[in-house]
Image 1 (tube, helix red, strand yellow):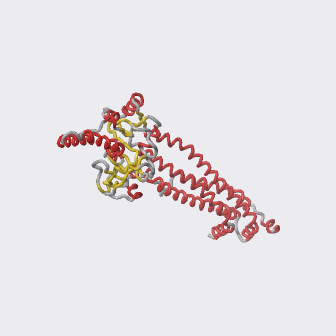
Image 2 (cartoon, helix red, strand yellow; image 1 turned 135 degrees about the vertical axis):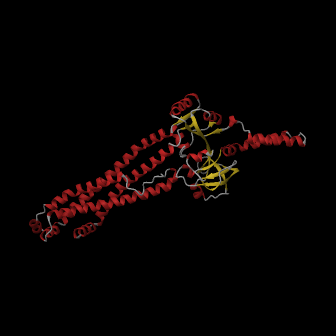
Image 3 (cartoon, one colour; image 1 turned 90 degrees about the horizontal axis):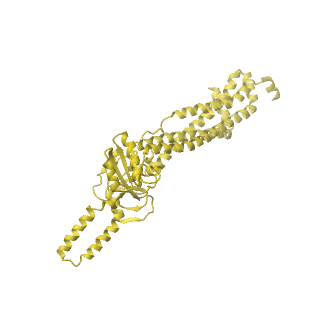
Length: 427
């Protein structure tokens, strides 16, 4: 216990040097630990989300962009596809289920997505308050949206054109919040969901109303009864029988019945239509592989920082040994053994790197909290590793201990071979 107190005293004797050693270790460990945890959580979340859908169909363009926009809602769509083409695909015997998505508007920076109830089932999302949409411009919002925008059931809002804040507002159509979803730890938490008809009417309302007005003016010469009958018929047709060829959606999520569908359907779409089919899990794996090189480079830099920390520990111990030779010689006279003197320096090095290692773990956990807060539930994993020690951190601990031992070998060897009489004589 006395030796441990002596080590603490030696470390505190030169606080700036000790702080620098601890800081370098903490930075290196913190960066590597944070990247390892982030890789696990993001990879876990992306893979699980991608596996919910077999194929995504959208306009021609980048397959990765299509997946990012239709599955994760973090990129712009590649364009629109005709609804009638999507309906043909849904009738394919190899297809088990299709879920249409239509978007292009936002409120407060959160995307408004027109879809069907099956989209909620895909992410196992359930209603916490209120009810699902039942007519055009009813909206169900994710829990993250409700909290950030302070929306409640019964509130109304106007959408804005575009996927980011600042677009032209559609003031002529007000959405009404009919329900709020429970947290599902999925992308749904950050979406505003409504019917497909809401999206179509929000963008076609002007043309429809102008068409209605012009037709009413043309029929003014008819008698009152005929005018009312024709006007009523026209309104019913414009609301219930829109031209199918004019309708479009942004993407179609497709689930197939068997592996044969995975092979045939994408090839048929890519070769015989103006649409493209992309595999979510393939594009996610490609994205993770592309990012892996950058992550490894950052980790390499962090390991270099830890190595520099080891050199700093060595320099600190070596200089301290020269300053404390007389003290150690006196300790030998009063009964301290050679191994104990070397052990003091080794313990000092280990204590410095272990304190740095613990500080590094704290840095990584704070970083994880920041990432989860900043990115929200779009990338937060249902299997959080923030409270766990992962295997990468165990290896990291062993590496830092080895570096500490290497840094202490030469100073400890010099202390072990300390010449008592010569040291006291020179002193």
